Image (cartoon, rainbow, N blue to C red):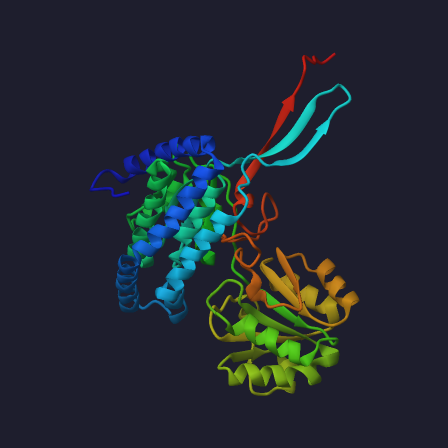
Length: 424
């Protein structure tokens, strides 16, 4: 969309109305048509790769001039390999089963009424996101797969890249014979557009999904006049139990923290069972330091491994998105669960142990969207869950939780079939 100097409020209201029309077109479309659209998006991304990478280079240059941090720039950056990964992620969404119309449950009442609970699109979904240009492609593919129209508003720091990818999205819609109104992108960097989206655009928006930093999510949750599917920061923990295997521990912790420090699945705090701390912590801490990770530990952790800075209270609630890891010594599963409950964001938490009973106790005690046993927190990703892609990791407890894929972007309705029954 290009406001062309027109009144922004009028343009945004028109966008809401167009999205509602797009949602009706998608609701009536077939799974095969939606598949054609998604595959067309992937083909468009590849066909437009030079333009997309050139746009990304322009965004990166501006980001450097504006003083964006290195982790934020890393999130923003695309190269040929990453762009091909974006295209493959879109294709993966085309391959997953179409959820629209799926019967979740069906039963017959004694009076003969046949009742079915059936998946149906939510309607119009607004996605407000920062930094990651791949979200443009992922959100478009997932909303089309789930039969929803989308209004996308990316951050100003990646506006050129987003618009270049959006051109590929339009290629896919055209190939399928679907209206361009099915996926629209806000092209202006004017922050007022966000406020207008949060107003609900005359009740044309059915769901708002924020994907970004704490301040963005807080603003959306405070101001939105439509339902919000929350995505808080990833204050993720890895707990090392006394039953942990050291070799497995080293591999998991290094991957959880350092594979990509700028993703929301990166571990931010390491918790170590007091009864095994002298055995586990020195080797794990040294491996992290050797890999370039700064450690910030509590008093007990620093007594065991002095080569770490003292942690402050802020370190337990900071999503670093950098090669920094907080370290605390805790008393078993109860101590780990208490620390996570006090400081975590309900995103992703992991335990490393060979003791099945301890693992089950951790699963029961930790109330996070994703709980892993003997696996890296970096698996907190819709693609790794087999969803093809994700719009985000929902940390709320209602409607959807964890990776939000196509199925999570549907609601349901009841279809009741009778043969003339009336209620006495």
